[in-house]
Image 1 (cartoon, helix red, strand yellow):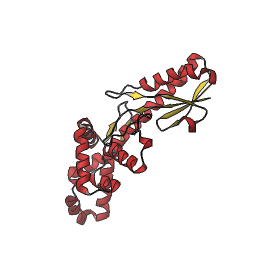
Image 2: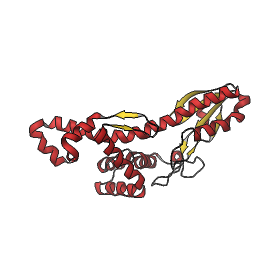
Image 3: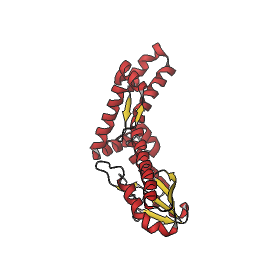
Image 4: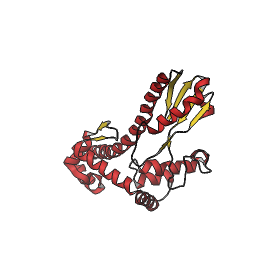
Length: 238
């Protein structure tokens, strides 16, 4: 019998979407349009999405998009401060670390910032550079700079999520060996681990796996929930 565990942070975003499977507003129960809007808010803004990109994603006007981002960041001031501090770090050092110490090198951001400063984000300044460098080169430098600033945010979130699950997977295999049971992590699907376990040990092993998933990596101010789902295959347990 297979054992499937889902590790998810129980939060709600601006659309009132829940990560609780039993809730009426559970993300996967919503229609695709609302789900996409929820993702645009909860992921896009955290990853550095600006008003124009949000406007195009949601199909709203520029003023509405600006208001949505402003409201989101005002509602989560810690997120706004984290975005600002992360971008400042990569401008000054050319690299960024996630919470558990993994490093992403972004030296081009530092190089561009040292040469042009934050003026590179001003379209009027970029236009003034075109006679000297050429329009295509200016656009490329701007995109490298903008993408690097966003990558420093994306990297921290994505790599930390991967680290949480990867660390748990190692501990689960070690615990199975310690208990002397036939169980092994077979695969990872995003924030889920699929664990093959002998049927007679499933109920006994489930609490151990949940404890490991939720507590191997401690994150300040964040509670991880990983309720176990027991099924004969991944489709039924997902």
